[in-house]
Image 1 (tube, helix red, strand yellow):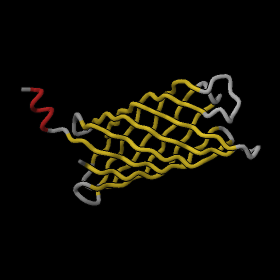
Image 2: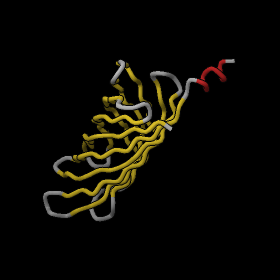
Image 3: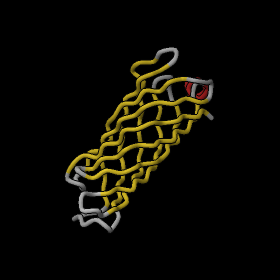
Length: 151
């Protein structure tokens, strides 16, 4: 009975992100998406992928790819908007254009996002996510907008 109740309250949705990404002094444009499954009114779990084209102060550009598993928890759920906490793990891949000891590894994602409801299936919002990893010797910060479509 519990499985049927949980399934009947669940929904799938897709997020598309467009962010400004910062890695130490480097900056770039990050785009990506996430496919999520809402397991409770306030909790969803999703898989994400993103790609960034970064530029550093030496005028060398490099790519940064990221695949992740994230859990979103809506701690403020109102009629027209909600606040969500973001927690997750990610796999990072820096291109060979930048010299690092390791170009691949794991990271921890922490962040928040605000989602505004405009229509039944289409929403938009703002998000801020930091990824902590030992690869770039510092944090990776993403700040930008999202568009959410409920399937």
